[in-house]
Length: 328
Image 1 (spheres, one colour):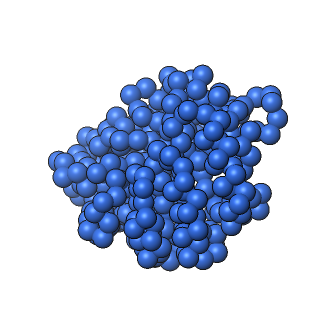
Image 2 (cartoon, rainbow, N blue to C red):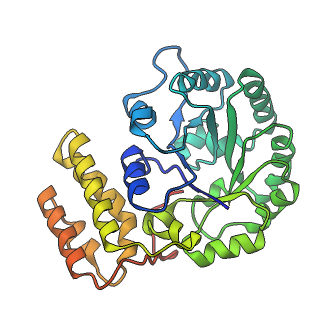
């Protein structure tokens, strides 16, 4: 079964992807955080978006750029720009639950405008030969919306349909609505990918047991909290402390090299540790040292101390009920 990395804004950008790919079990595909399609005919990509998709920043990875828009002309113009960088596959974001995005009728805010969505899909599939996948939720308000949405999706030659089984108003709270995913599963006529709350090997096995004919899974918060999760799912050798050290050193080197100043580099490193701390459940390293570090030197000392004192190899212990950050 294929395993993909979910696009998490500000986190799974090219520096993180490359570091992960170098030291842990590689993903079959990586999905870039969304590009907001521009409504004018000027610059297609801002500085951050361009850095994130440049081929030289993604060597050896199968990267799928994701596009956020509800305007077919803007989508097709963005696709044309991506083709110039060599991309042959793109992903449409119909899943983002962020209020500013939803209020603009984009992301999961597009799901309750089904006639407009149908027209949009018809126009983009007529307008390009590039492979198009969709990442969606099961609805905006109610999980029963997945039925009418599948009526639409099944009309088009989607490369893949990636479903996060929550509605927009769930954000990331509660449990996935697997009954809604099951409705899509029964009707699929395209490759189907399950995304949502796979934090452990047991979570993966349960999804595979319930939906044996899916083509793959997409990992987000789970693999950020436990980078060894993909290898565990595949039955590979346990991650070594050497891999952990190499991964953390690569992140440190790249963020300090590319950030405009020390403060920005420290912010990016701490943001990743919001997730990685769950791999060290026995030690309150987040509150004691990493979170409080005010300089890169303090940060580096905290990480080195943690790795020296940690008994064994980090195993990952994501606690569903304890997280306060809401991500994909």
